[in-house]
Length: 297
Image (tube, rainbow, N blue to C red; front, side, top):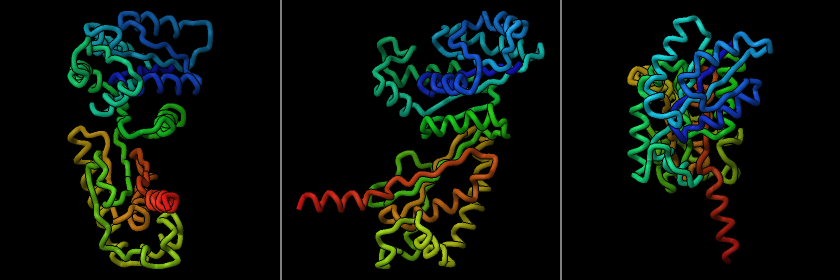
């Protein structure tokens, strides 16, 4: 029997993961008191019903003292030979604050005080659980479908998992640098398809634009050097405990060159052990602005 403990920061997506696992055929129990974990696991293992996969949700609602005890309880269960895996979900404080405001809910530790302090207090309480985790997923930049892909990859397809997620984002400098970017690359030095009449209305997702940009020796050399830099940086970030990296690649409008290079570097990493996705933040903005201007006229 396989047991998965789903825990982590409030607002990081634990409820969503429990629903995903339930859809995937897991028997799910949410917010079970920590003191009942050993008894529950024993009962399910001895059950006459054929329960093969169980997911248990564990969070701050069980009480601060219980959460502190969870670390030793889980250690004891592992030492007894239970097939137990721990999934820890986290997200940045600004993202969690935003999620709580959108849902108009109150953080369990807020108690009328500031939410950002409550979040940091919870982060401190969960340090030991995070250290014990077999899998750590930072959901700060994830959509639900992307989170589902990661959960399925770990617990259904059972692929090798590395607690590190790469997000490649194309953007236009005239619309501002992405606020969550860890690394920013400027590709405005590359040949610009904007000045080629047939390519101007297209984007870096179109083969003609992609081929035009990548025909440049500078573009190919830049791609190689960016890949080498990331190959060097990622293991060092992992050693420092970082679980995700947002790489922003910008050109003037975020439509041609940045999209092309984002697609190219994503292709270099999409089949590695790291979680990986790409976004094109500003790819449609020029077109939408032109539509708005024509309507104003």
